[in-house]
Length: 263
Image (tube, rainbow, N blue to C red):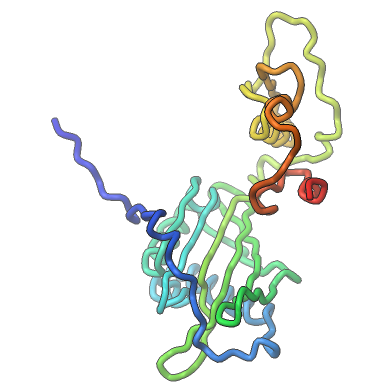
């Protein structure tokens, strides 16, 4: 019997095509010097929160850009996965469906972080962060908005969401305790049989970071690696450490000052 292939909902994006899309060029007239980024961000976030609470598809879509593509990137908060949604109609439908499952509550702007970002004379935006809770599962999450001005047919300027990012910060029932990271791990010894909750194969960057997360959660773990010393997978391959990606991509949990050390 032939297996029926179902279409992706929303359809998959062609990253090789999307990456070459031009950045927006602002046409709306805005007095950036007189603009209060925090107040504007609060107003947009309030409209978004109200529309989501009412499950109003048109109102949700109206908070996003209409004359160009808008995006929503979720990391585990709504989708329990890594997902990107494009265009406001698709985003609105996805938000309504996922909110019925997760039941979002307590959306609040993070004080003191709203700011105006200038890339060029034709591209400026408001950048802000917010927090929220989910009921099922009970979790704390964070989000980020990048807002652009959009001029309507009547000449009025309205602030709309260009990109929305959401991510899971932590499960409320399983809080992290960073004090545990300061406690030495128990010695392994010469036992032939070891009992542990999690076995991590490979003591490279990802393995060590996973071990740190598990330790903060109070989960017993064991890391094994073919090399005799921690960091040998780097030290035996490179003469020095050079970060080839942006700092924000190199930040490690519990070690936020790492990028300053490697500058």
